[in-house]
Length: 136
Picture 1: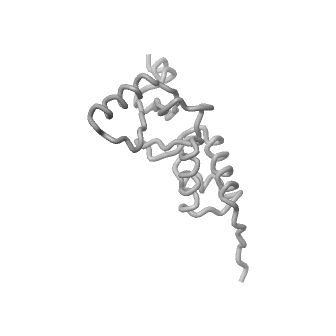
Picture 2: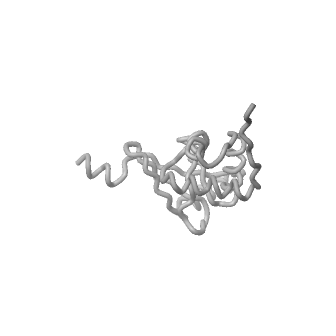
Picture 3: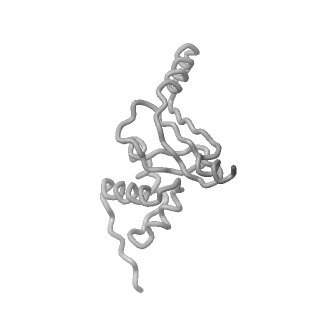
């Protein structure tokens, strides 16, 4: 019986592998899409990919897009707070940007309402400028 041997990678190496795949994708991807994308380079179990994604999110290197149940590499060098994402419903592009005043307004509401925020993800859904121009 020939068994494929798998080399157990350190967490840091797995994280770098997953992060590189996120960057190469250039679009939001699911954990299972990452597994398929990396199939030639590594044999990864879903729980391994999810653990790596959790670490990347915790470090600020990646984000989870709640509405798409997908992940993207962080495009900003430093966050001044919560990132905001504009997601095009037509072409699927995602733009990441900071909008401090929107985040401050929501944080102010939470404070006034004695609401403890665990996580905040702001996503705008619509049509990007390219798709809008194409439709005009």
